Amino acid sequence: MKKFWLISYFFLFVIFALFSFVVADPNLILLKYDWFVNFQTYLWKNVLPLQSFRTVFFFVLVVLIFANYLLILKNFEKLNLNSRKNFWQFLIIISLPLILSYNGLSHDLFNYIFNAKMVVEYGTNPHIKTALDFANDPLLRFMNNTHTPAPYGYGWTALSLAPYVAGFGKFLSTFFVFKLFAFLSLLLTLLISEKFFKKENYQKLALFFLNPLVLIEILSSAHNDLWMLAPALLAVYLASEFKKNKLLRIILIVLLMVFSISIKFATVVLLPFIGYFLVKEKLGSKIKLFQLIEKYSYELMSLAMFAPLLTDRSKQFLPWYLLWSLIFVPMVKIKFWRNLLIVFSLSSLLRNVPWFYYIPWMSFHLDTSSLEPLQKAVTWLIPAFYLLLSGVVFLFNGKREE
Image 1: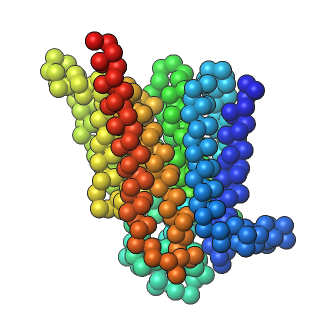
Image 2: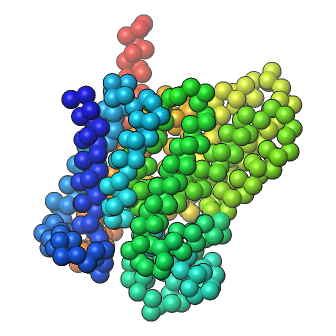
Image 3: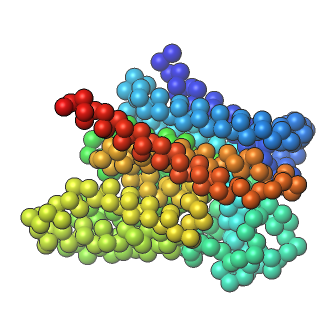
């Protein structure tokens, strides 16, 4: 029973991986083997048409996965995860089914592949041309964003060439190489995050690296956000440890931030904090404002990275964008803010529940006007309920102490 929550977490992700193929594109079967074709066909015929079942199943599965995550955190010491070897092994094991899963919750992976293909095979700039300029390419059948140029920076386009070339131009191999590339970003981010703790503290690191939202969005959907966050996180670490005017360190910090911002623009909000770390010794520590910045720097950075989620560009708080704030959760001291972000990670995952009810290619006959309002409601009402509950508990405890 000691390892039950570890084993159950793995098997819940296996179930998630299998269930992800329910929403595989109708014109895409990854493997041509008879057993897989039969499995995929069975899901399309017997599960996909059941609107209520597939929606409730996804909801229950997400709740169970998240509950399991919380139980792992609660029993962390008993599970012997607070050692580098055990933590890394467990993370790798639970990652495997998600790497093998279908990217059912997002089609961005196909955009990454095609933008790289535009450079390598078509010799054109995906930041100027659109996918529709190559309308006869079969990959367009699986893409959502075909009418606009690449929404990412040139840094990501350059970086994405490596997994594309490693796929040797074959769809299946390229698909899984991009998945492995996303897995590499997770391990790289963990390697950097370890540096923020002088003593091993994998219980705090687990808040981020075992979080279901992080694992599903990075490994199943293969989003590129950690490739933006990892260099920024390293720049923050190098700046926070900055004590003398070491030119090489400053140059490295600048290069890391330029690279991060060139992938996605969001980390530009971290520049004032990095600037503060570099000059804090000259500013002195007697001014109260600087003392607060020093004490709650990671809370403030997390809050700053939350701000872009409220803009129009974030397209109604896309779930994986929450990783921008969550990345600092292991270092956050204020328990309330840490817990609120974890609650947001649950609501961000559950944001997909209305989508499962109104799967685009299954809802041509339905009125889907309520989809976006429902997604917004799920995203914000769950944290709002947590805030209300926290307020009631705070008032009750205050009165009881009186």
